[in-house]
Image 1 (cartoon, helix red, strand yellow):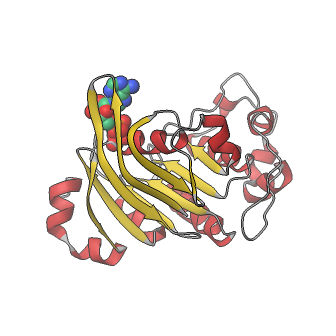
Image 2 (cartoon, rainbow, N blue to C red):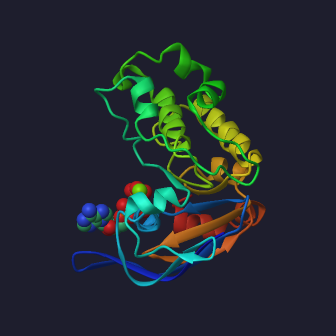
Image 3 (cartoon, protein in one colour):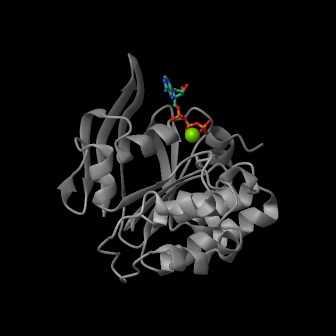
Length: 236
Ligand SMILES: Nc1ncnc2c1ncn2[C@@H]1O[C@H](COP(=O)(O)OP(=O)(O)OP(=O)(O)O)[C@@H](O)[C@H]1O
Ligand SMILES: [Mg+2]
């Protein structure tokens, strides 16, 4: 459904993505792991059009999207849950959710997201809909960031470290949410540093190091491979 082929991206003269190639099949969740600074967020930003690649192709549903502006990539059905949530602090929960709303074609199983469906998935957001974004806990902010991306009716969701800064019990909830989203037919690329969360929800694992994919395999293969965990993920 989404395919990157030899993608190269730069910040100024810094060559960050150095030939990234992988694909995410429809309805699957692929997790992208790697140390700080490996290029994971740059990969997510390149797919969503916030960073323009200088070489290579990004194909989404048989159409090349690497040259399109961000809003058109969103309109094609790629939603972003950014690292650090990036919710609007001076807006209420409800305003945060309704701002990006887009009437979509829905995904293959035809969930058409609207505010009521987001509130069904996250009842706490309904209870607190008139609170300001900043009045939420980290876990609630993550739910809001996911809900906001769903309001654009994506068929494909990019999630950048959804577990970052969250307590273990909340990380488990994030895992359950991701599994439920997959059941609705969404395809997901999830950047993570939490190996157990990634292995719990993903169908396939990619490891990035210095701007290229250096390993791929199933969650079980990663969990068995202590050398790879040590070499690229800093697990001692
Ligand atoms: N706006 C920017 N300008 C210049 N260099 C940047 C910029 N953003 C990131 N970089 C550099 O690009 C490299 C990759 O950064 P990136 O944010 O993609 O890493 P990451 O894998 O997401 O790391 P983390 O796990 O810490 O979020 C790093 O060396 C970083 O310093
Ligand atoms: Mg990052």
